[in-house]
Image (cartoon, rainbow, N blue to C red; front, side, top):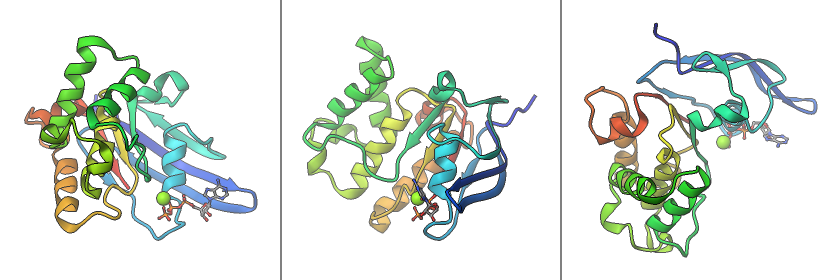
Length: 200
Ligand SMILES: Nc1ncnc2c1ncn2[C@@H]1O[C@H](COP(=O)(O)OP(=O)(O)OP(=O)(O)O)[C@@H](O)[C@H]1O
Ligand SMILES: [Mg+2]
């Protein structure tokens, strides 16, 4: 059965009197890339935060692979935040080792996974350099690598190309397009285990 990776139905989220998300519904199936487009303040980050279990919904439902997003099921999601969340004075490898250890990865499995995701985002040759020496697009790609570490079924990217030059922007969007898309089993496909993606 083709169970959707994500199903959002009639989602409502208010902040006080203000309705930030007003009856939003959409479905993401395996292998699909789904984009949420809208002006500043449209409610994109709020929608993401509810999906990722960081904010509660006031109305409506969010189901991930047919079930609600409980704390125990949050690891099915990889969330790449709007702001770069990396330690600038650590290298990409050190950042990934650290964040991987927070996901209960360790030892050889962690080291192998870190090498894999660095390859996926095309940073293997800069892996030992400190993040502060990276260009904006490289930082974005390192941020995406963190979101891929624990092999999520759904990868959510909030504004993945903001502040990024056109060339890096294209390489990020190409990487997103390849992730899980064609089912051809390349490293980008394997990194997601055939899940869905939401680029916002
Ligand atoms: N924690 C909060 N408390 C109060 N209002 C909030 C909060 N977070 C968001 N809002 C409001 O909800 C609305 C939607 O904000 P949100 O950040 O989801 O928009 P966005 O579509 O992600 O915008 P951007 O393109 O600028 O990132 C805005 O009016 C914002 O002011
Ligand atoms: Mg936002």
